[in-house]
Length: 162
Image 1 (cartoon, rainbow, N blue to C red):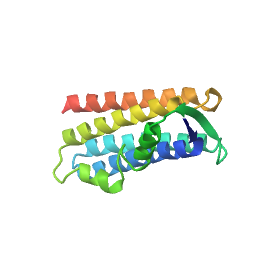
Image 2: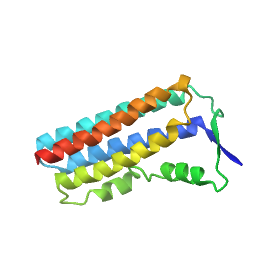
Image 3: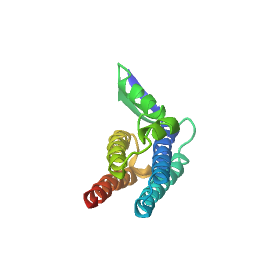
Image 4: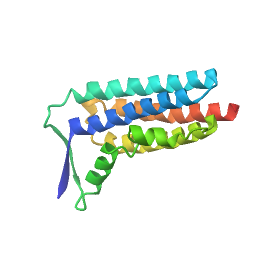
């Protein structure tokens, strides 16, 4: 039996991932004392905001009931994965985000945590890419994946400076 995805729900999950990413970076910026580190983290938050806006626009191109794909999934693994994403397993929920940055966390600790979140985001975007029709932005998902990869490179570059 195939699993049918509602496109709007998929993009709502993607929006939440980006929203949570922005919250993570803003919270992290509040915890660091170094102004340069603070500006760096706030810039990453702005990048996440841009991605959230993209998914919001893409979501509006679908009707509330439009389905994007029917995939074989007899054990409901795809559904469980999407539900886990909706429940905040990538970038977590607000409480989870704040708990990932313990008081006294170093900038390196924050960067390492962020790299893990960015990797999880790439995995999610790669999974939903196949659900997006070409005429509704499949290439844009590729662009977002490249953006997330660039976030990892940016984070690693900043870490190397420390």
